[in-house]
Image (cartoon, rainbow, N blue to C red; front, side, top):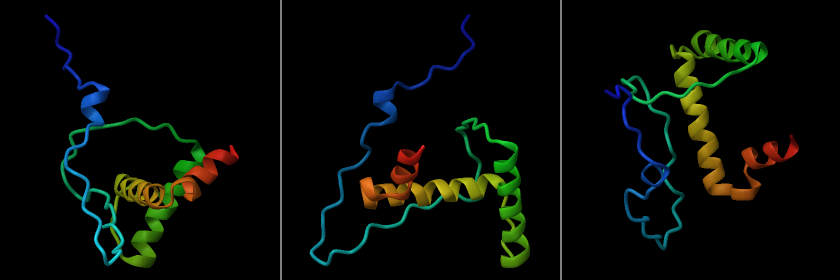
Length: 105
């Protein structure tokens, strides 16, 4: 008996779930993506980081708590950072910070 859950295929993961929003004549910027906050997350990824990256992430979390009175965990910081980078990629394309930094490597 197979105890492993069946996973969706790539086509199902990357399918469009809604029609593209109609463009408005007022040229309003698209709504910003937000990282999911304090909620139960059912999907997990594993990301390996260097000791220096983990230390920097923890220092950022402590600064957010101490200097900015924001009690957040590392996961929340990472989810917000992902949302910011994806918004920038969507709005700036080839000029996005992510594309520029990945090209430098």
